[in-house]
Length: 460
Image (cartoon, rainbow, N blue to C red; front, side, top):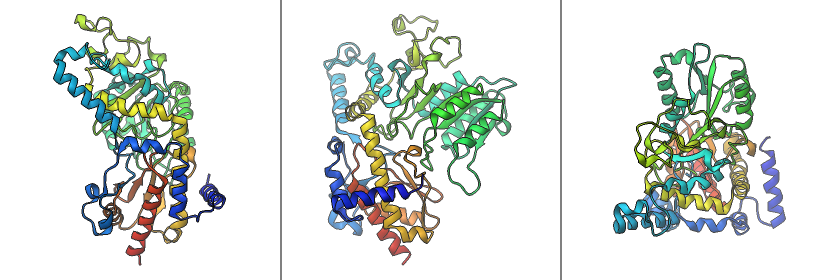
């Protein structure tokens, strides 16, 4: 699908509501019609003074909310997360160790991870028994590979993207080494076709089908650099048909796009919760294991006492008997503070619902694309930037990756000085991610208007 759909769509809307296509009034109209707009008040929005300093570009707006478009790196703080964390601190102060079982808010600490199972299952399209909160992302990837990457002389290769997040490369390479194989032959890194920025689904599937020595396919649900949303269902099916285990790193997909991990028959998936899930910097990760593996108790795993059968956990027996489902892969007891912060955000997702958030996300990101390719048309035609992310909404979440072949850092710094919080990925990409829980069409309008102003100054 080309970008023509988005131009036609927003031009038609502009005509229908009687607002100029590139006007602030049109963005404000969209915000007034937004049924999810109320959720913005559930978040703490940093003011410009605190994110860009006393910049001359926004001297009169220093106490206004920043244009925060960086949920792909760190989501904003839900106000109810602060409340829940403070409650736990108060319980700790008042009851000490008794809080593990006697809790005034009916959230005893000992089974605290149970409080987020329903919310996590809602995010990823799973049964509550298939998900758990534990560790952090890379630690969970290692835990899953310890269990599901069982190389043999015939099957020993792992498929990843050539430009996967560096930590994924490190984890996969180290697992290959641990099993006595050479990454030079055991690591299959898929690259886009010559002259293309994103991977084609058919090329991924072709790579899987033509190599009988692949043991594990481990891809990102959404590619962190380009923002491409992979066809998880189709790729997983192809991997299974070839006899492979298929796992997913969902760091940039969870809380961003609808997921149906159970229905798609995904073997395992791991994710962090501090990006689109807004649980706080460095917070606890999430794990999915399909129920089809629940009875496979002979599969090796990195066992810990929190994964032991919950009914006998405190008997302190030396023999490990795993809890059913994803909980059987837990190792250590989770931080109560981390769980409380995560719970505050998950409640918002359950209230807003994934279908409604996705509908807004498609429109909000479409509006960003529309303004970029129409309002900044002359800069695109001059080759000053291009959009790497696919235009088809089915192939992306809310992130658009903009490739600036020249002066990317200068442009990024100028956006930051104007109170626009996004992020850059060297060598040439700025990532902009309007998230539907707290971002507005007005945020998008100001971001593109500032970018136009910056490009006009730099390339005058």
